[in-house]
Image 1 (cartoon, rainbow, N blue to C red):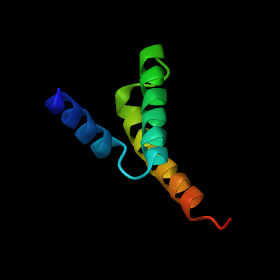
Image 2 (cartoon, rainbow, N blue to C red):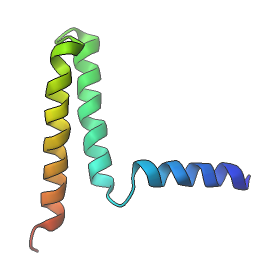
Image 3 (cartoon, helix red, strand yellow):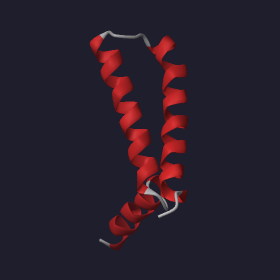
Length: 70
């Protein structure tokens, strides 16, 4: 049981890390991309650069939320 717990803790720390907002933003952008591809709104070739920009934008927004003055 200790191996399974350690394995889960490793992946949680690897994916979530120090800031859960960045991980949530990346997952949200990727889910929007999956929905667009599955529904036929965009093909994967066109969507890849847009998802890259979306992930970058989400990262910047998450950083701005963290560094803003209270």
